[in-house]
Amino acid sequence: MMEERKREKLETEEKQDERIKETGQAELSDNERMEDIHLISIIGEIEGHENLSNNSKTTKYDHILPSLAAIEDSKDINGVLVLLNTMGGDVEAGLAIAEMIASLSKPTVSLVLGGSHSIGVPIAVSTDYSFIVPTGTMVIHPVRMNGTVIGIPQTFEYFKLIQDRITSFVCSHCRANKETYERLMTETGILTKDVGTILVGEDAVKYGIIDEVGGIDRAIARLHEMIQKGSET
Image (cartoon, rainbow, N blue to C red; front, side, top):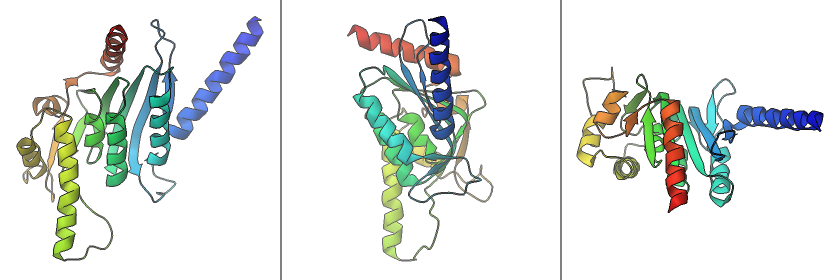
């Protein structure tokens, strides 16, 4: 019986390791409260409809979206922890992930580690509560577009529409108002040869983008508190 349990545990760990390797996701369930937390990591560049180079570390939104749907439908998963260390990436993919996380009925917490730049900002604020480590960074700048850009009024309007969608989402999911966010986004004296703002740790909290400075211990503890509070109502 003991050998069988050891074998089952080993098989479970191997499956967990493989899942982490393939999708950056894992189940956190070996806690004293016996609460099942689903871990999602947003790492590297957020990949959209086109596959990026094999040399690039990417987060594939076609992996994340089905997982989020399964989480919402699961009776076993109690909460979601989102770890972020991303340079940004595809705007539509990033917004899709952010909207899915924001619409989950399960408690959600995000933790910004190395950084959550560009379209990573909406994902960071999409959870019910957000943390950033003291050295974590967030780069806020206007939307950019790769490829051929046609210099006509319709192109300008399209850019404005995309930017308004991002700004609206961020400001509706954090404490920063539209005026403050747009001022940070169009700052000209911080980024070399570019416009925008770099917020480090406490600054992200001061401007109302992130809720609190803290690490993985605070993030998991907060999520357990939210799960417990939800189960009591």
